[in-house]
Length: 216
Ligand SMILES: Cc1cc2nc3c(=O)[nH]c(=O)nc-3n(C[C@H](O)[C@H](O)[C@H](O)COP(=O)(O)O)c2cc1C
Image (cartoon, rainbow, N blue to C red; front, side, top):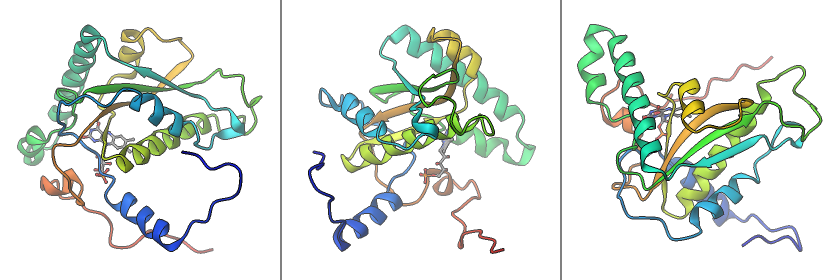
């Protein structure tokens, strides 16, 4: 529940909890098929809508994809794009890439496609003349906000970008001005980890030991 009558105190417990939340967020691709309780999707999207946005434009547009035929098309879009990505891997990495699970489209009970409305009038263009991509950044932050809100409730989210944006825009029949930002698989995770899945799968990547910062 939101407290709006007085500024809240963000105490040490909350600060420590936030760090745990960030450390345990995870991109989830292995889901239980259990449905989420009624109203959960709307509650999580409401939390996402508290994200910052360029010029207060709130350019995020969410499409909840329930229709099995549409889900099938999205999955086949992913399979095609993933096969193309596999073919582009070096010989030495192809076998490993083929073993990676790069989406939870098969089991996640909730699918949401996130778009940025490139022609949204809200915000009166403030901040986007110089950087039109600021609209997309705003949607990415909203997705991250949704990700954290979900994790707080023990719900996992996996971001799928191995998808052809034009095809998904056509499949979901959204306005032409909507730019595809990401496809989200959401549901209860079938396992919990504090180490990213790619690292666990031996993809030879890990979190950098130190942040890359330049001081000028
Ligand atoms: C913009 C974006 C796109 C992503 N696309 C995919 C994807 O298509 N498939 C996938 O398995 N993971 C995808 N991921 C998840 C990343 O692989 C993951 O965030 C990274 O490996 C770190 O793991 P963690 O999120 O569990 O900390 C994406 C993440 C972001 C932020």
